[in-house]
Image (tube, rainbow over all chains, first blue to last red):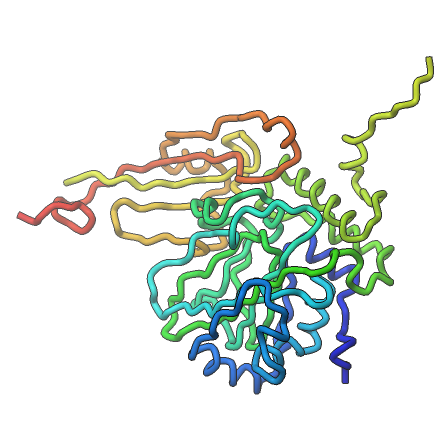
Length: 273
Length: 102
């Protein structure tokens, strides 16, 4: 059994995948008994907590949410992404009604947030099996570094390679705060529940995961991922910005597998004549 | 008969109208369909020109705007946005015409 103080951390390959995709998906990691309990718990609503609460203040020991956050895979992922003792920004129960008629516009939460050396994560927990017609969350892989404000992206209905979440009960997805997403139209006969918690880091986000595999070639491969919706030229800028984020997370200022950053910042100062 | 506009927005891989579709939206002024966010994974056309060949009329293309100084490496909205329309006859007094049946 994993000790709660030592949850299984992400490795560098999975962290690099998060940096490229802007999300981390953990399928069916929450036990069935918690998922069953969740439906009633979420149906009753979850009272607000003050912005910036500690986890201990927001969720008493033994409460449903504390037990959710203690699921080893969830605890380990959260630890790797935002470090120990993150603060609870806010939480919300999202309910998509049956045959509700429309989807949310594609958006990023809160307001435009252009931090390059820190990020919040949003934990999204799905206690039920989510089928395609239930309107599982739409998200756009690799959109998290785009500088756009909230639902100004609402004009975009579909992007090539988008993710329409279909998942087993007990799935948890962590989103980078900037990721474009939205609740899709629920065309089924049932309610769809999702519980979201936004976490703010309280420590510098540097090497918070298991970095023993930092030199694994799959790290650079993950960070070089391009997505079908990227425009050809802008896709190169995505890699440029992704390298800067990885450098910030690792402290390795030499990381630049495709030479994108090094090339455009080369200004030799040595004079020879 | 009355005329209603259907609008197709295509986002292309480059500024060329014959480049591949990377994103799309549809708005239907006839009221016959209700397109919405995340309603399909397959683009309606492979390129902007493919839409022209199917009868869509281009009425707006995104300008090519130089990056703002200091923001040359920023990423934001999709750049290569093309608006198309089709004009569709609908029965007078029918749904979406805003007219009373006589």
